[in-house]
Image 1 (tube, rainbow, N blue to C red):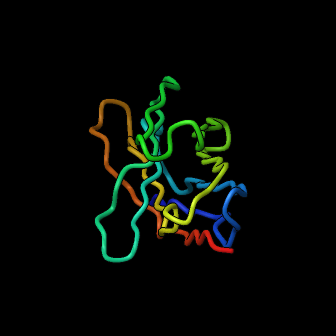
Image 2 (tube, rainbow, N blue to C red):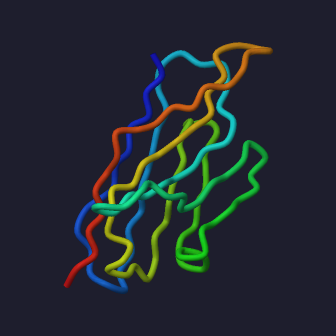
Length: 121
């Protein structure tokens, strides 16, 4: 059973920084694209940033220039460095990964349980 476990959330002041981590565990062949999504209260889950298996990145306009996504293949981990955070960044942040169970298999989208980020003074 593949699991994604996020960590690093918490309370941070406006203008501050936070680093989220998400590690994949369990039996899998390889990991394809990975990403971070955020969901504010009363709103739909939205993309924050993604990173492909080749390292190409994509960011939502709202976080571009402030957030950086990266991954460590050896550790099966994806990170989200959040700088110059704003109150509107307050949300639950979810990790997502495309998991391949074997060679030639189709990928399966797996979600983490989420970690709360609150930006407030």
